[in-house]
Image 1 (cartoon, rainbow, N blue to C red):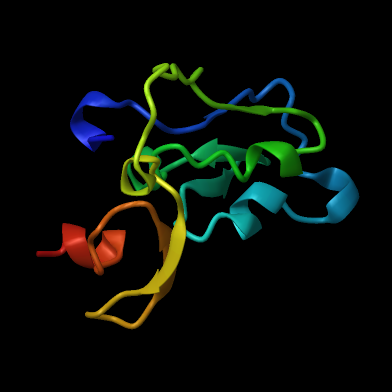
Image 2: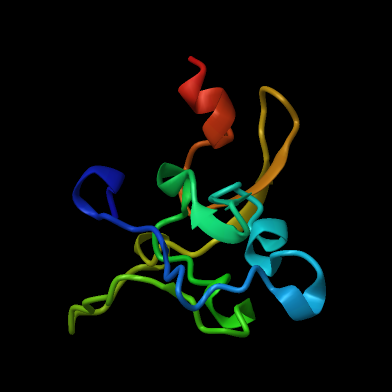
Length: 116
């Protein structure tokens, strides 16, 4: 899936978000390895949507208030090769050494890619 034609990032519903009050800190902010979320004005917000890995929904189930949502996926009925599924893999940035999750072939983290 190409980033240019696939808008993929979470939506945080501020009326539902309580910044994980029972847990003392926002779990999505702490959980996301790509820094998609930030804590602002007592709520979690999607600060870096371009850093979200296409197809990843790992943060959605950790939200106890169900304040995180993703676009609905559309599946084709044809069979798909493993490399076309967009499966996540953990890798290390060849430039800065940061460990991050991705479904792309690039071995550079989003920060190093954007600083080219």
